[in-house]
Amino acid sequence: MVLIRVLANLLILQLSYAQKSSELVVGGHP
Image (cartoon, rainbow, N blue to C red; front, side):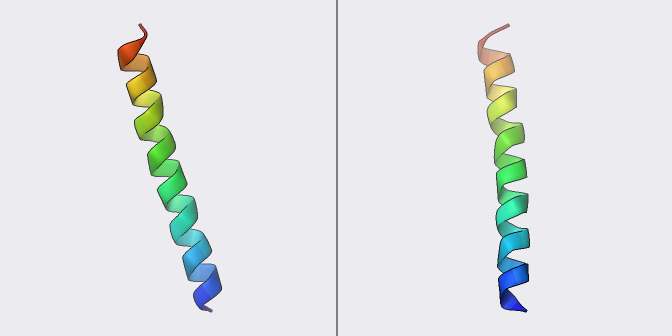
C-alpha cells in the first residue's frame, strides 16, 4: 500500500532530522 510507504518515509525523515538536531544541540552547547 502507498500509505505504509508514506508512513515509513515520514518515520525515516523524522529519525534523520532528530539525529541532525541532536548533533546541532551537542555541537552548540558543550
